[in-house]
Image (cartoon, rainbow, N blue to C red; front, top):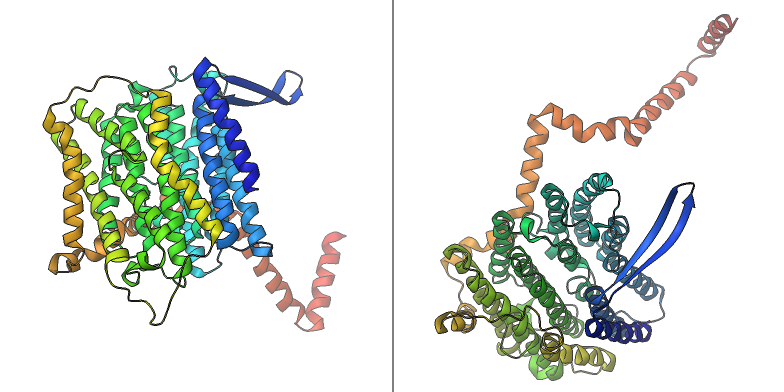
Length: 548
């Protein structure tokens, strides 16, 4: 499976190079059925955007499949189930990427939601079940917007949205944006993303780098309309997501949750750049982020694998002494995440920051933008300090070393991607090739905030004073976002009888109500048949008279 995915990666990458060189795209129609004047077509659009994104997804999924041979085992029933779920997941992403039709996009969109639920509950623990339920229900919430958009688009005569983007009403775009917010975990739908860390680490690497969470951003890129997207409310929400997740990651001690919150921060950056109008830069950062974030997760998986399934960074000191190669790859991906010059993340992140400075946003927006960049470096250095510099606090007489060659093979190629991919794609595409004229202090500000974040993160690593203790529960629980939604639901449910009826009519008149009344009826007949024979004969005579 991994070799097949790698082969198709090369195929789609060469197709992307051809399409960008000769400036062409393929639109393929497959007639599924025809009945009188009614016909159903499946449309496939292969242009440079979809082919490049497919090649990145295939590259990461092939590395994940190779990695899983060691991490999840091979040949057992459990590992085969895992492999089939990963294949279904990648196929659902394909259906979403290659289609310009909203019906078939919904097919891939729902496939991603359902298969992600199966992958999150893979370990069959109570924590996995609860995390899977939050993930599935939040993603299903986003389908409402897509379904309303589908009904709305009937009046335009076709669901091929790519031909009608300039004609649609702005409210239809708002439905699509809200749907994408749930899939990409923006505020107020952010609480499912750290909960989805209950899935196995290879799944996290695939889900949180290039598939599930980026589906919403990709859909918004396809639906891009500058007149509608230039909206301060959505921009503020996405920047708030970026700031909140960066801040909360500084309070977290679970290794995978820190990386999940960093994914949320980068998604906020992508969304905010999209609402500023930089559609090509958003796509560029989407691809470069997929490379170094998948590497980050796979390296974290190796740490967890060797350290006896431990995910707490407080026990992870001096990992560099035991796993030197993996530690080097881990630190490289962390530096790419921070936007250190000449790594993959720098080219996209620095361009977004400089273009946003040229866009002349308000002071508050600029402060949030640059503070989020500094906080990214802050939690990265905190993670580095806890896992590399501190002395180990794990079991005594516990010694481990790198011997899993296939895992090292996967992270080696992803490291090459994290270092080279950004400059390669920038040279190939010449994305938003415009002259950026900024004064020297604005040019240096991103780098200044990066080093300020490094310095603060190093000094705050051992800080556990009054402020940290008082605010720990607020920030480690993501501003109690999930709890607030529960209180909102509970208050509406308790005080409003009409709303209560709207929520529960399906239970009263659906399967649950029918089963309740059938149970009551059968209990009645059972108690009736247990009575004396005189009652039975009497009722028999009454029914006989009625029939006659």
